[in-house]
Length: 187
Image (cartoon, rainbow, N blue to C red; front, side, top):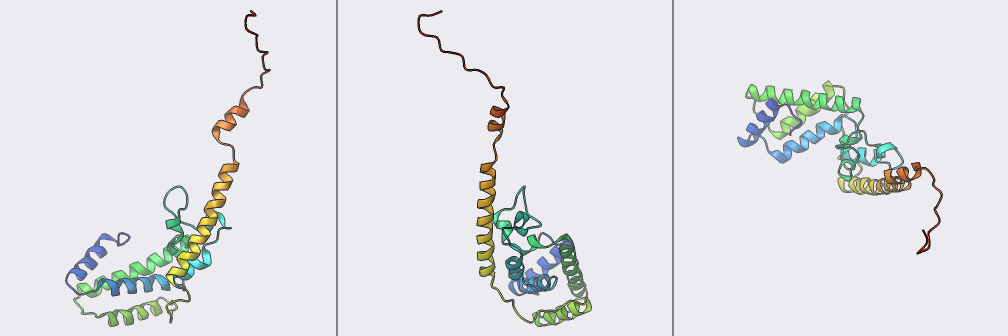
């Protein structure tokens, strides 16, 4: 929950501690909100966009200087900047709504949250998925891992084919004539 604003994170933490929400069910609904932002499940995004032939394997976001295998299996790392902004906006709006419900002490069951989520998505003119996706998480991870392994191998081969700094420095040295070896005893 570290991506949430501190106030919303504290509110949700209190709701979990007081038994008003169940973590597993809430996580499922949070993923549902995230899924609605693109019209695809996370697994479908990874499967559709992980491509070793694309620059950086199709990834648009990653931690560090270069993409890693851990980055390749996360759907958000394939989203464009406008897609990320839209998704974050949608999640933030929903959390603000949830916070308002809690502040007014309106009791909500998970079924209520599902109905409110569907209404919230309709209000925002978003499509509501009627299925859990056409690909499992495990299939998407397998695909992304296979693509990353091939991408990484190609990246290593390209790096090995390029001269390193030592080779460049040796080539830059001026050519010298070999000096004849002196025989022992000759001045």
